[in-house]
Image (spheres, one colour):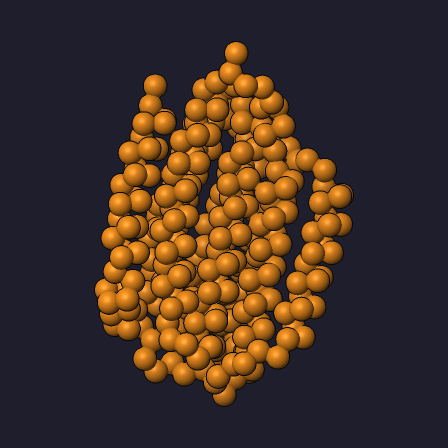
Length: 162
Length: 103
């Protein structure tokens, strides 16, 4: 039972339990804060997989950007005159049966495939290889994503205006 | 060295994906549907990064995860702008009560 195994189970249990609370609670604010905990758990899993740059980008963009946006959306689309904001559900039982079936099939195929894996080498992963890949092979996608973010910004601002 | 293999990460990713689909299908509030969608995107990202670590083909999976994060941010901004407009027109954001076109 190494430290790596303990850390993996810690982050995996945090992620899965808070994702379960996101989709089953009736209080919207509880769901938003459990989503934040899920994002933290996923960032920990990224660090365990040797992707430290992606982990920090996840924390900055998801927790610091998208979650704040979701909280603003919750605040602006509910009448917060009473103490807590509740929401309803639609058709739990058929959804549970079908999704349980889907999950069973997915797990069966995932654990019974012979994956061609190499042993974990934590050698040349990190910021420098990712940066050099981004600037050399994925430069066109990088520039196009800049243009796409500009379009998304202008579009969102002009949709949400009066 | 240790007993955590690729399958452990794939199981975590599948559980997150299934819970995300459950959230999208079951929830009535439009913002909760968006939260389920973010869970689905995070599950796919874990898959990408896990295969980039355990496979034999370099770090292209990490860059795919980076692009997915960027696109999820843009899409969530526009989705929330649309939800705000829906709230302005219908005064609630329950997805089963928004069933008529304008006028």
